[in-house]
Every structure is written in structure tokens, then in C-alpha cells.
Image (cartoon, rainbow, N blue to C red):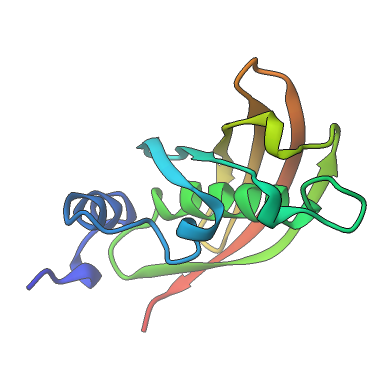
Length: 147
């Protein structure tokens, strides 16, 4: 059995993905998968479809917000030392272009801008397969001792 508390955040993610598990249960609904990750950075892919639509016939903003929040949080996770945890304190999302089922796969890249002892500042971008920028986010995460 793996002792996650003795591992860095990056080692935890490596062990989790090596086991064949999804990054998180919500990933299945968003068609979300890990493309790559390194210390301070992560790339996910997601696939918007009609189940993500709002009443006006486009993908609900929550789809983009969830991908952006996941990328921000996971980027912070890769920087944790053993015995640390994190949680999102705030996120600001800017929606630049609409998505539909025809948009196809999208990629979100999260990157830690600055990390300290108690907080991390993160940014993320969501782009379509032609690299058109669809949405951006900035986030602040609290870092604290894990239980």
C-alpha cells in the first residue's frame, strides 16, 4: 500500500495515474483526461458535447470553469511537499468565445505563477484544437498541512 502522506504532490499524481485511475471522478462526465503534467504545470483535454448545453444552445460556462479550476488546482497539487494539501480560495473566469458540441476536443493548461508557504497563485487557458483561446482563469489556492 502506498503512503500518500510521505509523497510530494507530483509523486502522488504519478502513482495515481500509473494505477490506471482517472484523475478525478468528475473527469468522466467532462470527457477529461490528463495530457501531461510536470511540477507547476498540467494539461488536460476535455470534450464538450450536447449534455453540457445550457438553454441557449451552447456549452454551459460551468464546463469551461470546471476544466479551468481543475487545471489550476492540479497544477498546485504538483508543487506540494509531503504532508501538504490545498484548496481553492477563489477563481476568476473570463469567457472569450462560446463552445458547442462541434467545437471538438479542448485543452486546458494550468500553470503556477507563484507559490509560497500558505498560498499559490495560478493561471489557466482553455483553447480549441486550432489554438483559439476560449476562456482564461486566475486562481488563488490555500496551502496547509494535510490531516
